[in-house]
Length: 355
Ligand code: PLP
Ligand code: COI
Image (cartoon, rainbow, N blue to C red; front, top):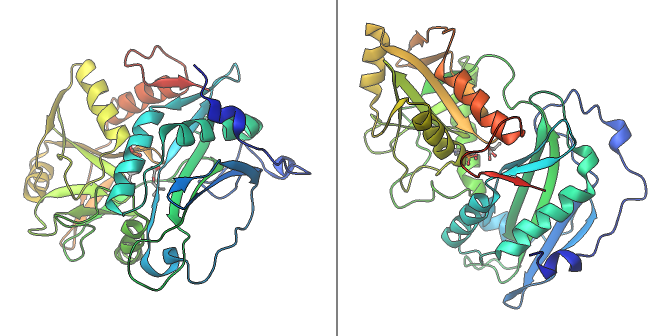
């Protein structure tokens, strides 16, 4: 049944679309934005009716708490267009659920499901022409919310803003991905906010990632903050490691984002008869496996990154290369998951949602 909110969202359309200025067949990741955006305010203890307006600057007071205390969360999703021009979302209710998990941790009020789902469907329908169709492209969807209420008192704000912006996007990585296993800095800690998609989690990664980039790596692999001996996740991706023919990923925890791609990959791998293990993976084990030839693959999994094979890793000033495989798990799993996302194959798991 169609919810009533969808019919109530007022839409102010752009006077002139910018779509002709964009080459939808040649897109970088997340750097051009569609014509419209959704905005919804939380005031006096309640969410107001969302509205859709032209994409553009918003006005905030300098004392808005987002600027001072970083009360801000986001989600990352994609809309996929098939060759019939039909549009699909992938497990969107899981994103909504995680949005509210992040919100609670950051003392931000939860957002009702219909605001999230109806809001993004209405926005996508309006800007449907912006959804790219070329191989590897999709509409990256960025729902986010932040403390727009004012005050220098270090306590939660009394007003919040929920927004959704759309960025037609190509691949997140261009070229080979080499990672550095990090031992000095930590992304998160027990009891912290690592499992939330809080803006500050990403800001905190930028400096160590800049240091890794200067050494020729594209991404940092985070280890646990206590011992730096266990592999956790990689920047904006969960990480998978294939030793022999077993596919291993670490367990989720306070410190790790519970990735939707990660859990989908595990399900697909199991359905394909691949032996999977969800358990602590040590750096020592991975280095040993590389030395004795049993380390076959490493790859990152995430909405933006899809499945990104890792070409090699650095650890304690030594570089370890991964073999180039003809029939890797990464390419098979990427094929399976994107076939479901782009409506090129059956969806036995019921993950696809038609717009
Ligand atoms: N880990 C982190 C820190 C991320 O930012 C992301 C991206 O969203 C992921 C993992 C992968 O999560 P998902 O597959 O839900 O996009
Ligand atoms: C995503 O995969 O959607 C993410 O949120 C990663 C983002 C930091 C680019």
